[in-house]
Amino acid sequence: MSRDTTASLSTGFGRRDFLAAASVALSGGLAGCTGVFAAEGNQVNIAGSSTVFPVTEAIASSFSEENPTVNLSMSKTGTGGGFGNFFCAGRTDINNASRAIADAETEQCGSNDVTPLEFTVATDALTVVVNPDADWIDCLTVEQLQEIWQADGAQRWSDINEDWPDEEVELYGAATTSGTFDYFKEAVLGEELNHRSDYYATERDRTIVQGVQGSEAAMGYFGFSYYSENPNSIKAVSIDDGNGCVEPSIETAKSGEYTPLSRPLYIYVAKESLAEPAVRDFVRFYMEQAATDLVSEVGYVPITDQQRDDNLEKLETHVEEVTE
Image 1 (cartoon, helix red, strand yellow):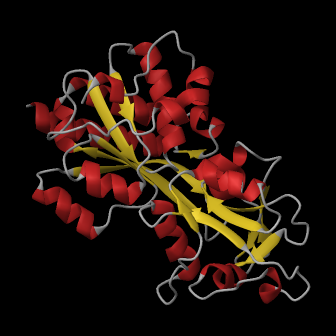
Image 2 (spheres, rainbow, N blue to C red; image 1 turned 180 degrees about the horizontal axis):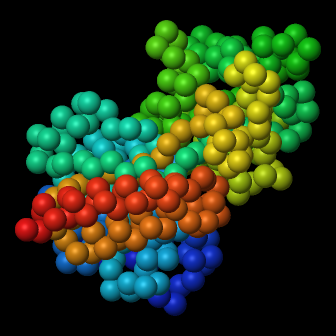
């Protein structure tokens, strides 16, 4: 990988400055990566979920303040894109994931001698958003969400409720390579219904934000972190799963009230990459920070102390196996 394709984090570049610039500085950071287990010396390569990206981004910034010689390269590729094109191909050390790894992905990893290790790092309240001027909507039932997002679904707001405007619904959502797409499809549409294809699909969550900001008739969905960055310019829709309307928030995700769109977030680590000191040091740091308010600051629920301890115990077991 050439230096100019790698987004490095260094001391002297504070977390707030880094987070403000990261969406530009880190995009496409893996384009030049080649070879198996790209960690070499002080290099750690990370791809995957745009939903998990803000957590990894914030933790990476803190890590770099203490470890300025370690070069961290990160890219938003979507969960599936990260697994299929980078992680299971042996090109990255860590994959951010907003869903669990699929059987086919595990098989692909195995065929390339990559052993994926799963670590839960946060809980997300996947959030449906509309334009603030859409004053007719504050809450949707799961059935109404199905009407909107299923294949051949509602075309106009009035198709869902005759009292709503006779305007075409403009839809923005996750691309099919995204774990957010997979989770939303499973949680809302189930096995019987297909996700509609006539919507603006993107891995760039801020593009969804902009689309919803720009049209009174728009709707989108993404991780809670991206809503929490823009609470005054987009409106979160409460969800009624049969027990009344529940607003997405860190608190309702933590309590389990926000169903069915609360979900665990993960990172997957290539066991073989733990032979590299930079990788195992970063993962240790990540597990410790995932139980702190740093995760809350980016809009997700931190893991519990028990989850942290279980993650660290699991990590050390695998570190011993690859460093004996």
